[in-house]
Image (tube, rainbow, N blue to C red; front, side, top):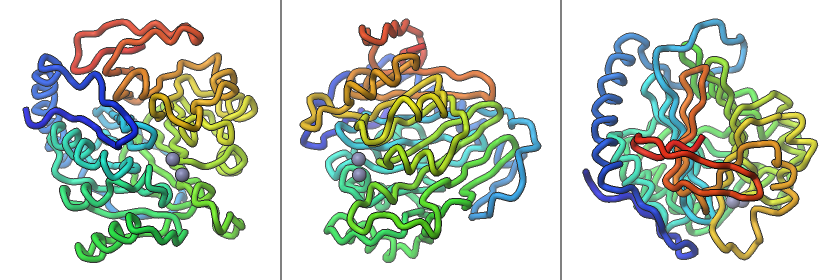
Length: 335
Ligand SMILES: [Zn+2]
Ligand SMILES: [Zn+2]
């Protein structure tokens, strides 16, 4: 095993890093994944590039597993996705200090390439670690919203993309990032022609819907409730709760419409914003909620039909009556 993943964003005390036992189990998993990946590349081939959404899913899921890692990066966001056809996607990269930990986590899974790198919006808690990521991995293509936000961190990221001649796309609803049998990854927002704020990058957050077989995942960045609901009214199984659990991004109407079974909140312990907001947790009272500040890294898998949640730490979230049970896997099975 290489370095133990740890995250240090200056706002968050790392806890519950992967144990050696879990790490060894993970090694076996990486070998298995590598074999499955190679087989799938041969069988399925690779599809890179953006296409427009024109046709519904007609194929059965490939014989693979979708694995979504909601990384514990403090009060920030970073989600690494192992697509069932062996391709990889990283949505956001936490704050600057989290970069090395994110890179270590992905390398420990056995990957050297990120096929799709998505910067949902140019806030430091979402693109801070991008420079580390771009320098560490072979990058396929990058997707960013068309919002020009001049900060040193953003400029350094863009300069690194230019230096590496990495293809960069401006994301708009209707763009399809990737498709494979049973799998679609679509951008739902921002919507071309809509007047978003000139001053708030959150409104420009790239919203992504990932459908694999009968299961659906939604990634919302820091978009506010009205923008998420303008983008979709599709039912989702796993909702990445918007804006770290801020009340601006989740309400009862949204939960009622999207009807998630699982909600993942990427949030830092003791953050100064009071996230997740109590009204958000109330709105999610019928949903199984997992939080990176309590559960650490949260991993959700889908075989196209069944969803399984794993977490670094078993935690009793008393007000939600979630009782994760231990599972002897590379992480603890949470539900
Ligand atoms: Zn933001
Ligand atoms: Zn944020």
